[in-house]
Length: 261
Image 1 (cartoon, rainbow, N blue to C red):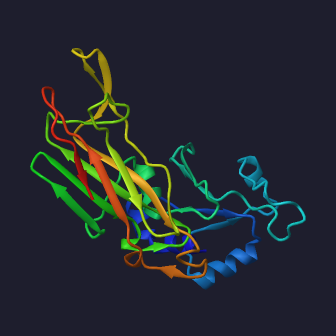
Image 2 (cartoon, rainbow, N blue to C red):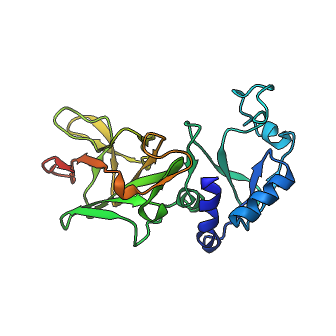
């Protein structure tokens, strides 16, 4: 319910990105019509009574037995992003049953880039050569139970500089991002953009590096220990500690490893 209402509130963002929304559930049409009217949903909610489409897509929740009425037939929750030719170009499913992708994550996935809003909570450190920012992406700085936001760490590296992915030789530091918070804050797997190889012929090794603008995205959400299913919780009440470690190098020398908090 929370996600559907949030998608409705973000409908202008989808329209600006050239995207249309459709929801499919195993509920009967009358129930979907009542829900749409009550919550002001203006995009189509489609009824898959008998879960035929859900089964064809292979997302029937097999943990729910036939005798578990009325829940039998529900899918594992997720989102398919489909292009204008009807081809699935992205699937957004969360390992945790309560996780739901935010509108911003859907739009970013469809467009193939992370679009940070000017008004999103952000902090930046660094110098003329290396700028590092951390932005809480989505929801205008708020977080809701079950809706997955993203913490985006963006590096802006001057020409000629690079940072390292794992593994690195002893004495060098790979790029690491860690987020901690109170009990109830959940994080997913860190998204890393593609690297490119860098050969150190003198050492006889090849390393994986990033250059230019580099975006790392960490899924973040809260569970019932912070906000019950029927309540919303403001992100400003949930402190997060972000630790970023990296080492910037050029073709000749490496700078002193840095840690930003």
